[in-house]
Amino acid sequence: MFYDLTYLSIKPNQLGSVMSGLPRALPQATRSGRLIGCMSCDIGALNRIAVLSAYGDMVSLQADRAETLGAVDPYGLSAHLSGIETAAFRNLSFAADIEPDSFGPYYEIRTYEIAPGGLAETEAAWSRAVEKRNALSKLLMVMASIDTLPTRMVHIWPYTSLTERAKKRAEASRLGIWPPPGGSGHVLSLRSEVFVPLPISPLR
Image 1 (cartoon, one colour):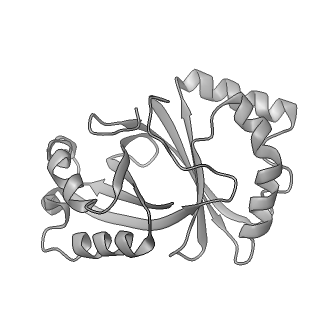
Image 2 (image 1 turned 120 degrees about the vertical axis):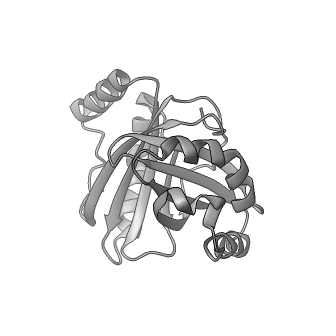
């Protein structure tokens, strides 16, 4: 499966206008794909909405993206936007495709930039450790970008509360199973943000 992850940056005091326009905008932007999640940043760079869509092939993903971004008024919301950031991803070999459900309401999206040539070793380290980490709390997805340099590795972790997040991360560290041994040697930068689903989001 291929995934499009788009961040919509919103001008101050325009969030309400964008949210009300999303039920019209997103079906038009994801014509050949399937909307997986639409979430607002709660902790991190605020006034940003993450839109995650799934595609069966890159041709359809690229066609939808080209039509949306090539429009005079992308998403029909350009008056309210200060920026659009988009990238295409494919899940790592051990990561199953996302089936939307109620896993949240908090979704931590962690973005790592990986040094050139370092993805294979990073993926191997994660594959050895992820089963034990996943037993503590669910890893919804880990995927790597296929159209950015450096490569971005994005992993998404749902939690029922921020307290649960802190508890599970501390337990994984205490047990020595996470971060994955040998999995950080090629990481150039790290970013973590917490998002909450919007009403239109299939992920809840």
